[in-house]
Image (cartoon, rainbow, N blue to C red; front, side, top):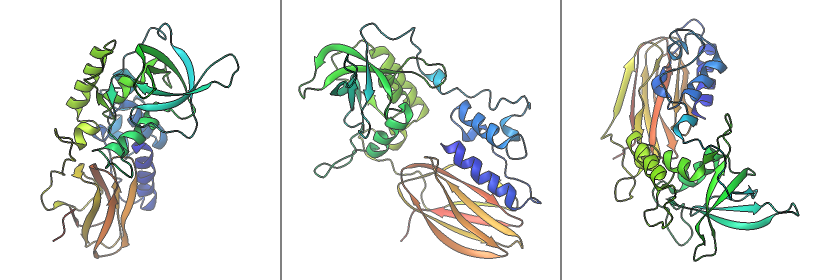
Length: 328
């Protein structure tokens, strides 16, 4: 999670140079209250985290939405839902999961299940190109629902199987905190990892899926941020360079990037340590610069997926950093 890597990096910044003012972070860097709370709980209330808990009551970013509150809670599992276990080592692909359906023997019958009412961008294959946001969507679909080796419940649709023989089902799971249950089909749409399948004949949860998609679009989540209306990858909205400067420890505003390489050029005229971390949208971080005394130089940072990045700078003197992905 982004909050975990941010925590580690900011702890490093504070520990590396205790005589300097620590770079503070605020609620604008988090989409959900739980992520901000994880940061506050991990680091504690100090110069780094003080803007997360301005009233010092131990609760971070109280105005942020909670992750699980975004999804409809059920009054219990729907009638007719059958317990199943997601097969270890399988992956979601083309809206399909491999499960073992519970039976009296205990081993369960292996079955392919197609999630009703949604489309997940294809990650591509040897014969077909990846669709926009495909690899990220398929990977995130697992982590967000914790599918691997997980217990789920399968609710039958109006039609039992599709033309490929896959079971057509709504997939339910328990939340990690309040146990839900939650509808996975809806959750994936709400987070922007899937879109509504307008051709689906089963409309039992059509209103919920439509509402989930409208919210994901409004929030610019997942594929609604990465892809344009034609399904092509959106180019980052920077033409040329983005430049930052200052003379104190700083956490920059996020700025857009595309998958590829980010070039950072830095100049520093202080006598102490100069360290710059790059934080990616998927939670990864890279140490771009870590030098003592005056410095000028450039580094190339790999960017795995389109989105935004931000920089955390530790400094004891004036600095300037330019960021670009364009080279003549």
